[in-house]
Image (tube, rainbow, N blue to C red):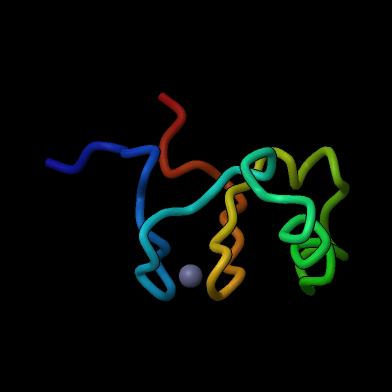
Length: 66
Ligand SMILES: [Zn+2]
């Protein structure tokens, strides 16, 4: 049985965990805004996403919201 963990590792590089936008440093936010995915989402939407600061995998939707 799998349960959702808020500290899931990055599915792409297995870095220790994904970070919410508000957890990023100012420099990291600038980097996040340079990623290709930033063109597809507004800043408001991206604030709901989670990011890997190693490979910049961006998680769009929560694994489960139930
Ligand atoms: Zn990663």
